[in-house]
Image (cartoon, each protein chain N blue to C red):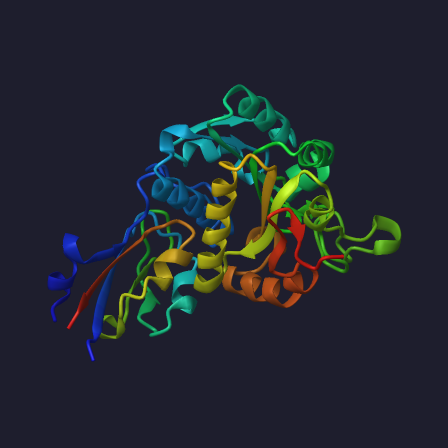
Length: 260
Length: 74
């Protein structure tokens, strides 16, 4: 069959969602941010809630997420997205409110806001992109940087004795009573992408229940910060990051999956 | 058994040539072009168009969402 006969409107099975704007993404080639943006917008499109969704952009690589997502968005001071989301959700409890944050934003500068928003059980969704590094500012060490991992401020690898060990804020907040759904996913391959999309959908659906925070972590690559090609960084992520940050649900319907 | 035949259309000017689609294509359909686009990236294209089944794997992993997928069953 000729290709021209295949490429017709009625045969289309996948296209970029129109909820992503025409602006070219500012991310490096191969960065997971673009995929996660698109997945969130696909879920918003499928649920038909474009005019009822309010997103909060963080500080970091995703600081201009409002240029790429065709929904109402605001942008918070560094790490303060959960506080801003709290205010917006309390004013408009019927709206779907989500924050989109990186690990420097959520796990370092915004630790207090994250923990207290999760502890209060605000009815918001938090999307947390963890690439183990401060990507935008030049690859400095973050709290989530793995032990032995090289970054521009730990050129000989992270040493736990002097720099402290990496920490899993996702498991930490899962212990708090205010979180309702906590999961960790990745977007480096088609299978994980489809699972991640289901988790995003779950996080949005949970807002109808008014039961607390839904937090989805995405372990992502930072090929520029890690000084690798996109494919090499994805392989490195599978071999190293996934050991420390295992995939899967951590808390479902307010109950810890490994019920201890 | 019905056989699926697919085709992809790459938005050449938006493609950043990261090759994530190429390694995730189960049928080795996608290759990177010799020439570059306006930004200087070797963009993705259908190197072996007869292999494509329209599985959409390339499109769902594309960080920039530049791939549109078409599929017909024969």
